[in-house]
Image (tube, rainbow, N blue to C red; front, side, top):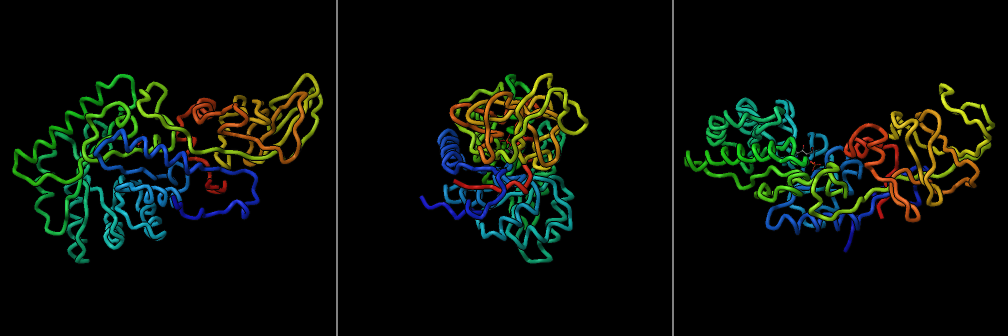
Length: 381
Ligand SMILES: Cc1ncc(COP(=O)(O)O)c(C=O)c1O
């Protein structure tokens, strides 16, 4: 299969700290989700730089693989995709402000309408520009975030059907707990969504073509929620949304984060290491310095817990994680300048997972992935 040219070729990259994206893994994850979702359309969610995997290359791959829609969070992400020549349908999932609407219309971006007032603003801009607006209605079934409450949806649906310059292509909601072991709250949300959809028949309104609510958790655990389209985010990238979620689809992580040794030294017993002089050894040790830090998204909060892989073995990061560099204790082992250091991913059969980093940082895999800074070059293989 022909994959688009990467934005950065390996030969152009001089920084040893890199994120390597396995396009084959992204491809097989996409196919696994597609097969499980049956006849439902697929909207890969590419917000926050495609969860750190690179917005444009990931979008190009998804286009090649036959994704039906792309989902992003904010207008600028949609504009970047259009500027890169992506022509497929794009839904901006987040809230909108009036002054943004003309940009949606001029760039054929699908709007999320989350109130009667937003609908009126979209109608006004669409009529002024003589461009029909493509809209998905957002129903709040239990997140208390954007969207019209399920119990107020009737007036919203009726109002939406009256606008002359708006095509209501879709209607959607979002789960708060579909990745939990206990699905009772998610089942309640699903029932509320179904009740809202029932209004169409009750009022004799035309049902929108695309009904959607399933994120990764719901794709995995609630096939009854797949409707006309599913919206996989983290699962597409090969990571499960929680530890407890049922892994009904087999996916593999697509992202490896690695660097290289840039310095070796022996640190004497009692000589403190790093900012704040918070760590020292009671015996002589060998250390290496690796050019990655919290300025790259290697969170400072992992200090005292983080490990890295060198020659297939785990070694602890010692001293405080700095903005651009970390120090690794290799005790009595040997490592040399230019040796590969894996921060996240596999090396010689040993693995550091995204979940490991999340545990060390006291966060979730989503935050680890989306915080790998853009100064870290992405390599596509
Ligand atoms: C509206 C919406 N749909 C789908 C997703 C994808 O979620 P996940 O990464 O859990 O699949 C998100 C991300 O939070 C979202 O905000």
